[in-house]
Image (tube, rainbow, N blue to C red; front, side):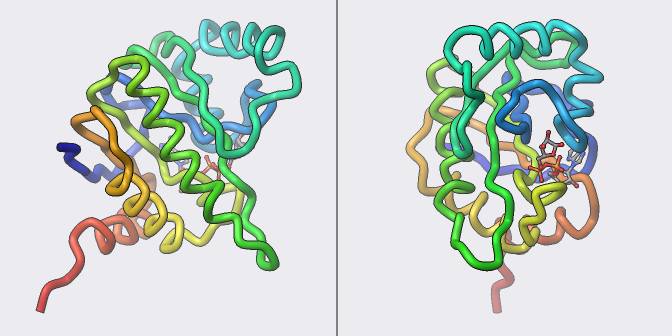
Length: 173
Ligand code: AR6
């Protein structure tokens, strides 16, 4: 059984088997979680991302997919990079966001990771409304068959934390 836990804070301060990065297709870094992970993970993470670009992912990592690298200096064994969809008012991209969580867990299973820390993918620079992002994240993890024992959502601000809490602990009457 997979336990869902919620933490408010900076994901780069977490200790877990795998830390998920809300990356972009280039795999070469950016702002938000991605910037923080590369800063604290150090050059080993970027070096492996560059190798992936030079080998299996010449055109970059497609949206909704996931791939692992070393975690460098982070307190983790692996970083799992996934590319969330950019929010759209005119097109429903929910399946791609769900795919990020599913694919990350699939990669985690392949690696044998028992604990995985996720940020709220797409809810920053990519503009996904955090309440909806939380709904998709929690539902997808609950519906995915995985050997991961703990999925930890690490939420940077109070609003994101509350959005996830509302999904994990629905109010009972
Ligand atoms: N720890 C945990 N959560 C964080 C942290 C942190 N250190 N920093 C930000 N967040 P974002 P995206 C939250 O923008 O929307 C990058 O440039 C943030 O408040 O990191 O998927 C990539 O290279 C928000 O709730 O990722 C891509 O180009 C959530 O993490 C693009 O941004 C995700 O915000 C990806 O955008």
